[in-house]
Length: 295
Image (cartoon, rainbow, N blue to C red; front, side, top):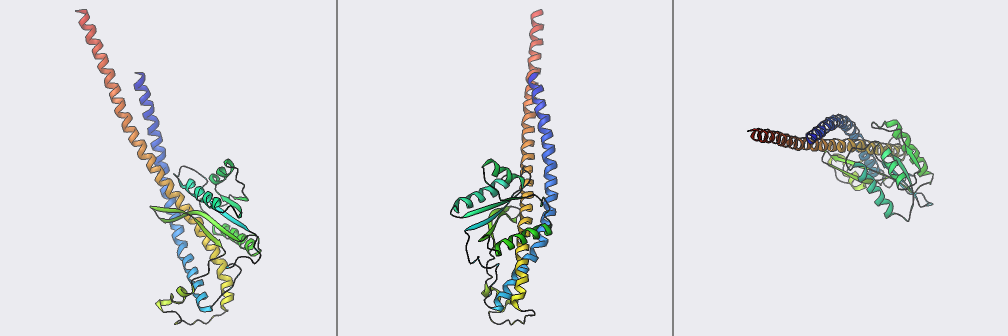
């Protein structure tokens, strides 16, 4: 009897866990759909502004800009921004990002790297491993606002152009499809110079040299506005991809937990039925044995 009560208690606990993980899966699914909508809405603008910069670069010849070149006097310092989640229960999402960041740091021990962190999980990891953080950003949450990301990007551009850092990189989970996300180290600054040959041939499929542009204002002034906008939109896209990847990972993890709880519930039900049948058989045997003894 004690065994059946114990199994029944476990069945109830597993049922409660399954109900919780199922609810969390549905919440993660709703958040994923909202985050995916925001990310896909911003992506065409990010791609188009990069394409426009490439066309201007191709038509305007060689360009020079502070955001495209490392500082003349190298400081040997680099800034790395790591995007993690505030909450767990999302599978290997945070572990994969932090592993990628750790590998990058170990491969670049010759550089002085300042680390800035987004997400409580990353902060906890760094405290446990005694990794010093330059700054922790707590203002973004599950729905990063463009104005907050813009302020951070402006801060990075100011510090980079002032010669404080030779480069700025972002470690985050890049979203490709629902079935595929990968942690990457993205060079944010200096911006990679646009491919001039591709830019010249991009307009309506025309070959290099067939497209002539008249600039008003001139190409240098236009790029002075477009290049900072490119940095801001690229960083904003990183945040959007990170949120989408987190929700996908949580959705998959909670579905796996729900399925596992369902299998365990079935297994416990079989155990309970066997234990109950054993108890009934034992009682019947005792009754028959007692009846036979009285005859």
